[in-house]
Image (tube, rainbow, N blue to C red; front, side, top):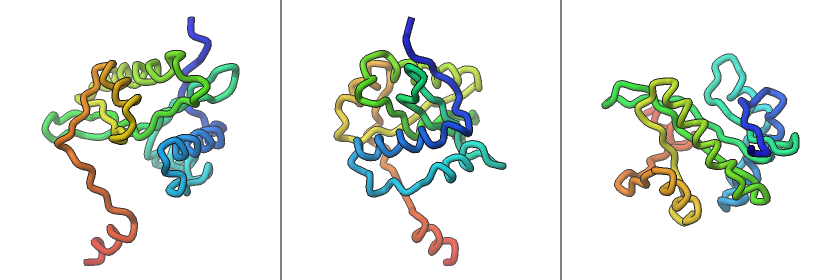
Amino acid sequence: MPDFVLRPARPADCGEIDRLIHELAVYEKLAHQKVGTPEELQRALFGERPACEAIVAERGGRAVGFALFFTTFSTFLCRPGIYLEDVFVEPAHRGLGIGKAILRHLAALAVERGCGRFEWRVLDWNEPSIRFYESLGGKVLPEWELVRMTAPEFEALAKA
């Protein structure tokens, strides 16, 4: 029996999830991009129009991992999907099956919701994660490139 628990995030978890997001940003060498606050996260998760959902992994009564995800839609399949924005387990708690349990939980949620896809991204240098995802049946799609606009670009486009 695992010595951890997965559960839906609650508003009171936002500070701990924010702490874990910071740890993820450091791990991914992107700490300079982590500017969101626990209050902003709480609005995104539990506000009037939630933008995402989260699950928390607890061990010994303490948050040691999380996954943040949201619903997408495939025009080709005409079905919803789940997009896993981020998943993170503290290094001291890896190898215990927490990451696999999180992905299994989200896969079951995708089945329950009638999704056609369950997708996420992985940094190209993160070989341990790539191998882990592939061991679970995930496929890295090298032909798809991420296109991103940040606020200055989409604000300019909106005014054009």
